[in-house]
Image (tube, rainbow, N blue to C red; front, side, top):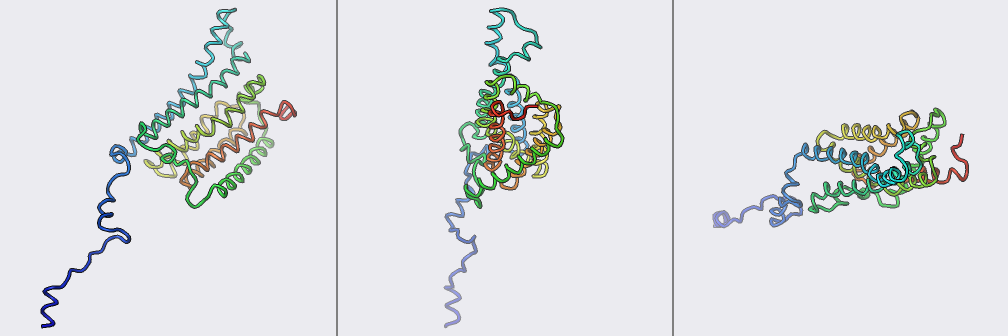
Length: 290
């Protein structure tokens, strides 16, 4: 009697399910948190989009500053005559406008990056791009660490340039052309360049390359690409190119191992900020005069 009834009315054993998940939650897991197009998008399509975004940022950098200078060129043509190329290259107003034109360039680049990252307002921008501190690091500790890294990079940079020296770069000539050009350069270096460059290189481009080709390829290619686009400005000064390359690898490695973009931005901002203070104040204190 006691052996037969329990076997006929025996309740089934509970099946195993993931710890902490009810049956309802288990079936809800496969629901995507983003659009189906985002979920199905291949790494290679993302890489192609990132490359086109980067190339678009370069095109903007080439053409927009020139467009900003067009009204002044028209003014010269209407009032006197249009100077030759050599005279334009030494015209203080043209040089100032070429620097000032980087501001709308960066704003248009920011718009381009926003459209790509949000996929037309379908996704949150800052969260998607990873513009935050790592979960294990708070803002205070993170900022302090970035400050130390920035100071170390600046010290190494000053030592390398002091040791190797070098000729004045095209950026030096732009900065020294006039006080407005000097102040415009300092403004761009602090308020627009760190954010836009990090969004393009360590944000959009790095993420796509890492997903398609792996971390090692992403670090090497993005770091060299970022340094390479600055070679034109510093082509006759090997020490400055070395410092920019060191900065680029540091920023890219920070992005790779933190998993977030904000630490790279803070380091870039501090590094450029110190340089900008030197650029802005050097005429008043005689810094860098030979």
